[in-house]
Length: 114
Image (cartoon, rainbow, N blue to C red; front, side, top):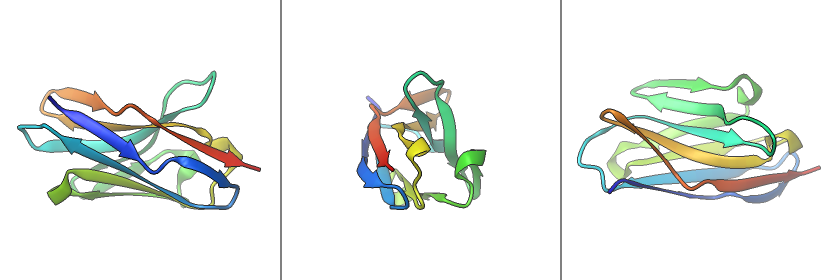
């Protein structure tokens, strides 16, 4: 059974940094794309960043502030978040594409105080 376990969320002041991690276990197949999404109260889930092979993709609101990276040997994806803003407050979800399915983590709360 595939599991995605996120860590690294928390409370930080505006301008601060956090690093999220997501470890994937239980997969019999290689992982294709991995990414981070977020959902704020009353809003739709949105793409934060994704990585596939050597390519990365970022949501417009986080470009230049967030960096996604991946350790294939550890089946882990990271999200380094710098210059955090109150509007970055949301539950952050890890996503992994494996074969023909998408898998999601349970989410980790990120709260940025002004």
